[in-house]
Length: 369
Image: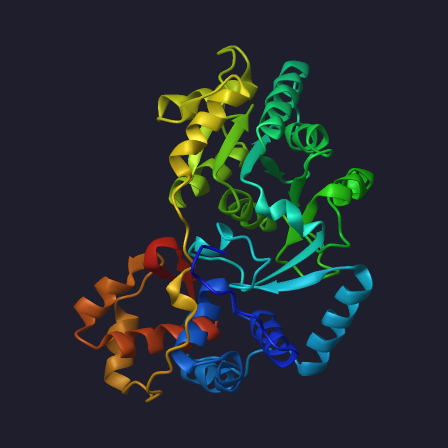
């Protein structure tokens, strides 16, 4: 935690309520924050979900029951997994600053690695020998400089970065549950990582990673880190998604240049043309990360501020809905163009979101699904 900021500590009952809310249908990290801020706490938000869904035009939502949450917490305990809440001492301080920080993360291993300055290293799954070699060399240099590495446990560059930093500490960010390792052949690698490092995910035990879970995982990789290093990335590589997310989160982006004749270097060379810092050794990364060493403070938006829960009038709701479309629009524009109050617009959006009719995006944008 940042100096002068006291970490929170949830009671067992509060942790249960947080888990129930984030595991309920149509409640993601941004919705969780909006509900908590509006209703003053997770229990009141849970009680309000059926009403919100009905007003948004849907039937009763699937709400995670107390029994389901208790079973998950018990299973986590048996598997050696800790559920850490946003704002608690072991919640990574950089991760809590992103717009869609998970309210709860599941961690396993040595949490001491989270105290080290982190740098993410990601790249091609189909890496060439030269790409693996420079990854290992840069990773060892970062470890000698006191940095921890962060990556996604994927084949190729990710695995090379993890292996080169096992002795000092590395963080593997998972797209599935702690018991659903992908790729499966990296289960042994993860066991080695856990001796000095950490596995982290926002997904529950038993969750099999799907294609859409990997970009979601990538935002955690960049969010955890001071900067992101891309080593080998094709034109449509998932590593470029991580680079974009890093920029949106205000992180440094580094790229290792490659041969213009190698398709695996198209993405990294393009990043450099767009302003990413070219790097060939660890010192380049250490120098660049020095620009990101300013103090980091927790987001204030998780502080509950219970508001008046008056239902929007039919004409107020209609004006807000009429302004929505599949194209993302800012909440500020909805407030201005609808001629209604901030509270009313946010309440309508909550209703529509719990009903599964809208999606929240970064930068305060929303769109119809």
